[in-house]
Amino acid sequence: MTKPAQLSTLGLPPIAQIGHVVRDLQATVTRYEPLYGPFWFMDGSVTGASYRGRIADVSLDIAFGRSGDLETHSLIARYRCLPGK
Image 1 (spheres, one colour):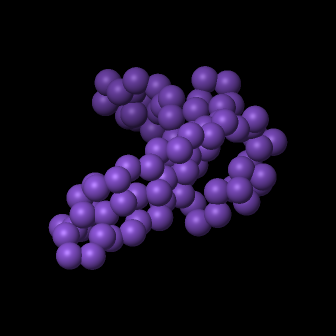
Image 2 (tube, rainbow, N blue to C red):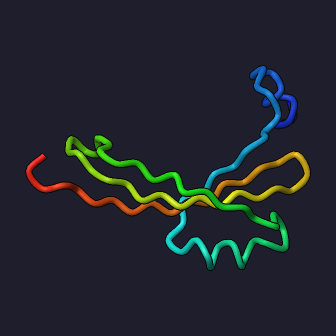
């Protein structure tokens, strides 16, 4: 049985999204814009989230791009744990 035939037996829908966690969002956007661009951006920051058993503020920057029907998400997250919580 070929690999595509094996995958089709799982009954999963086609891949529509791919996500990446990156160190440098702007460098990633610049590098992949010819393939997935233009990108659009969203601030997904959250305050008071539970992170590794502590309360933390999460600064989350997300860039979205497309190639045909495939959507890609590149994001960078920075955590700041709040003292004493």
